Length: 352
Image (cartoon, rainbow, N blue to C red; front, side, top):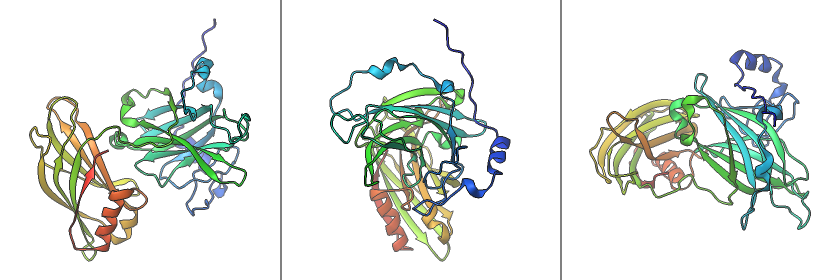
């Protein structure tokens, strides 16, 4: 059997991207949600999305560059199976670009029993914890086994890569043009070997509901206070409880990052506390945050496991912020802080 010739694939240089953007503003359009889309593919197929700074679609690819063995197509289908998706991930550390290639999906559910063409799927890509913005594939017609062969680029710094999770959500468009969720798949980027610039081909079975947290990692008590006259945000990192370590309790500290539109504005760290699963940090940080940035701001608190002579590891994190970045208790905490300015608002949050 002849071996397939391997053809390297690299993210286009900035000069190439600049030439693409110089074609004109027709490559951008406004979606129904009012956001500005990513540049469209060279075929000028316009697809709705919500603007992500530095993220865009590369459009269709030559499938021979990403050819995978089809022998895994005939896998044993588990009970309650709702499909499987194949994709490739590559991180270019020099340019801090994350390349995601959607390859195909198999065995998606059909709307009509016995009719394998009664499904019109498409896919949205999210970089969690940001669930409000996404990049989107082209629509595929009348197939439960779509081939996408599209690539997308996210601009994400190396230091924040470990805090991000790639979320793939597959939709079906019914005859009334409603977008119905089929299922989701997660790929934590902390599992990706970003140092090697290696492209990995991955498959995941779709799940109806997913969470970034695979286990109970503990909780963190956080205090927030915002002074609108001074445009000052005060973050209190008070204590943690029931932290889960890989082996035994280790030294820990908390890294606090304030971001505006996913760009890091300021980073602070607590003191390192000695081995305990319920550390009392009792530290506060004051950060400048304009009133006009409140709706575009988020706060990341990451508990780090510290070991001398080894790379610090993430135990878990909490993301607080506006509706663009947070949900549930984390969003409620932020909104309560904004509504009760100059009052300290304290809540426990589960780590993810």
